[in-house]
Amino acid sequence: MQTLDLAAFTSDPGLQSEAGKLIRDNDGLVCFPCKNSYRFGVSLLSEAGVLGLMQTKRRSKKGPALVMVTNPEMAAQVAGPIPVAARKLMDKFWPGRVTLRLPLSKDLPRKVYKELAKPDGMVGLRHPDNLVAAQLVAAAGVPVLVSSANRAKKVGSTSVASIRQQFTRAIDLFIDAGDLPAGPPSTVVEIGKDGEVKITRPGEISEEEIRKVLE
Image (cartoon, rainbow, N blue to C red; front, top):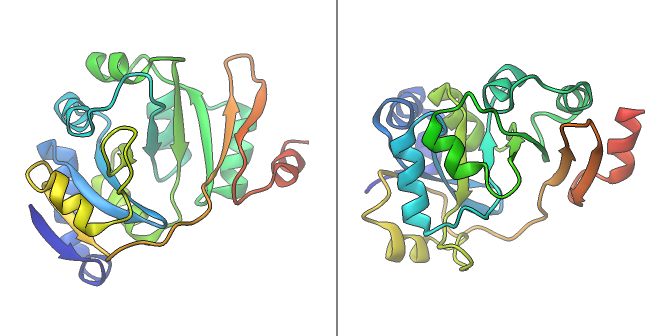
């Protein structure tokens, strides 16, 4: 496992480019800090990367999927045509702490779609405002499937010691920011195939702010 200090990564475009290439071209698994927890990240377009992440996490197909992107065009690679309501929220709150749940595109690699489509065929999309996450996804240039850096249904995604103990052999690159404090989650807004908008998890952005943008 290669380890980089957070300050070194965020200040060096060369290191960012290498990390992006690891994800994009080499099916690599990167562990990085994202505000209040560490996350695993792999290319959503890599069947080997996605299956490797699932095995590392021991993650069931019943868990919701989260993908980080850098713009609405990249989001369309993941969820197909973007609904008007989703585009309004992207324009207002991205990059930021709003996760949009949209129907997963069937144009993704077959094994990726099969792994992520259960149980409801939806995927969470976020354009992160966290610096290291934004730099990493931008350098990769592809949608990045992310998941908390712990075993399924286990704690430990804020602790460097826990991550090193459990995942040293699985992680290709670890961006170390020390232990992370807990914090509020993102607001999750689901927009179904019928266009119905539901706020499924309150977070930093209030329901009132969401509804105001959609009016």
